[in-house]
Length: 406
Image (cartoon, rainbow, N blue to C red; front, side, top):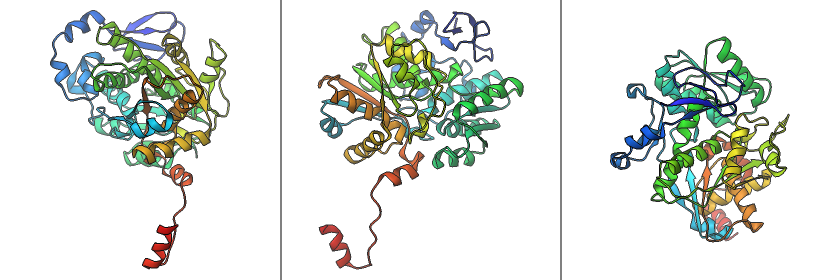
């Protein structure tokens, strides 16, 4: 039987119960797959022949009524081999998993297709989330597809314009909270309890289930070979949690033979997990006023910190921080070497990889996958600020010739 289990005390709950935290100890919950039943389901090769997408792996997902599936054809995002960037950084086998190619332009769509599908299966009437941007855009889109009213709580004045425009265009009620993401999230949690809204932040265990399919895809696209390292930007830490859960499930089912090292990269101004890992602390110290150009990871008190630290330690991985300047430099470098335009938070992971290489912590022959979590058009203002200005000329070939020669 599939169940929901507390990561702290081990208490179990029915998979169709609306619950976000353990009623016994208050810790986070995680969906437990039935490995024996799942092995029987995937004994045939039929599932391998499906087009790559989140729902290619439907046997691994806790949605049981296929008529309730809400999909915008998410997943199946490109895994680019980046030889020019790899040469620049000094490694031979570098890949970038471009999650910005999802329907709303970020990895959040993986969790939302499962989360909103489960919401319909559970019979909920409205959904809510707190967001620095990508979550609100994604939930608004999937709620619109499902016909569910949607409320998004965002830090007032601290959300990238591209993401806010998406949420509003999809018809969500956007509420600006005078405070940071952590304040908005607490309000969303309270609203789910008092007003009956269904919460779809990554505290919801079904979100993680959708996001773990990215780990399946990485192995699938590498012909079931496992990279040596997977490098991700870390904010609320749901994504690194989901990837590790996905790899563990594949290993338990005998679909892969080894596990990758997980690398979590945080912005220097919002780095409670990286600091706790460096100090070998069992808990984090929240950052009261997180600040970084990478708005998607501008989170000071990530709810998934415990699972993220577990993933880093279990995988023999590491965590580190990068500055805003390092983030912007790698955002531009990836675009100019490989033609991939990502938002600043996505570039944090690649900036972290660069630092590891410079410190001699990465072997030149390793196969490394960097996860680019969101499209560059999510935050066009940051991109414009980072680049050279427009050169204005008179409408003459002579004027253009001067520019070309310069």
